Length: 228
Image (cartoon, rainbow, N blue to C red; front, side):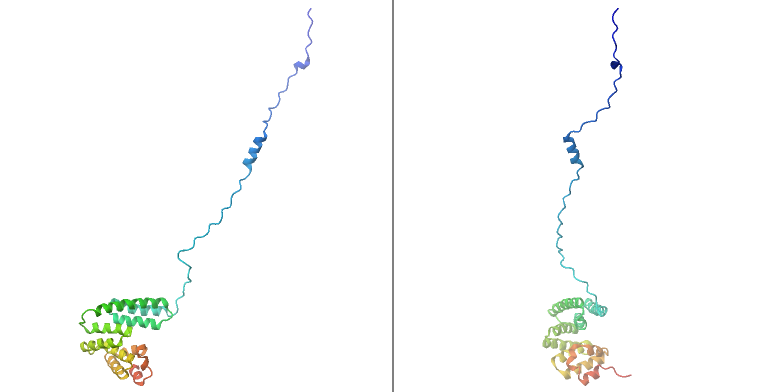
């Protein structure tokens, strides 16, 4: 009989399945992973210099004085006369604004600019033919403002021949004579002007053209309203 082979129990044992091997990470992969996880440092950008303003330094806002509203109203009076083409009276009004409101530089600058515009208009009229009393009067006022009293007087005399009772022309004659130091003539023309228009006494009282007569008793009597 053939001999029975001995079966080894070792061969009958079930070989346990080995757990799947973990993937081996190479050093190169580990390094790359480390590189990916490392935060990237951000470069700080240099501060951008601010561009200088083309408008220049900011000026503080000037607070208008208490007389600002009055100055504007006085300026508007001259502007209305200017638009009415009464350039002589407009110049007079603008000069009053400059004298009465020295603390308002903006108002004064506007008044000075309009004086130049009015005088330019009066010069244009001066090159034209004088037909009316106001033509002579307007040119005379412009000449008085420039200090040309002699030629101003000539035009005022011509204006009075055409309109002997015009109060504004008589007033201008009084002012021109006062500036020339002609006391008696100035008082005479001023008296006639007030007779035709009583309000001229208040204007003369505040008018610097009559400064040389301010202490004269005859002048005070003219500009003082009569007692009722």
